[in-house]
Image: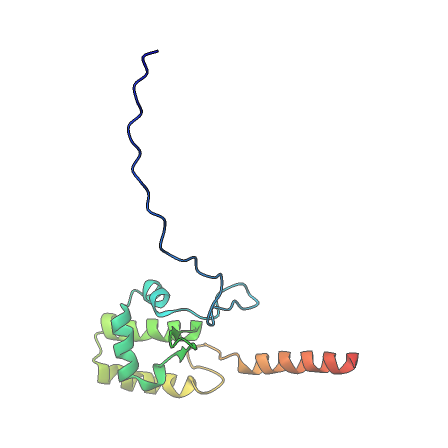
Length: 145
């Protein structure tokens, strides 16, 4: 039996990476099945704007700063992504300066609208429906008691 010895197999290193939990620090999913919060790397991939540019824009447009998780990671919402895409269009395609983009966003009412219930861009901050749903759930609990 003339069998050739099999070549030695390379030793594999055990993986040092830890498995990530399915959801952590605000990566909740909303009722529609889409993500509620996006981390800066995800937003960077979605918008095509590098993470360091997003952080710079936060310093230039104070109202644009996203919420942060307990671990201090930036948590962007869909409306934040839409504003970033608008800002990207103003700066890159329409060739506005930072000051010009700030003025244009003010004209559109974006900065104030992020604090108000309805954006001029058709974006909606969903606080009212969230409070309505909470109230309905509390009333249902009260009725059970």
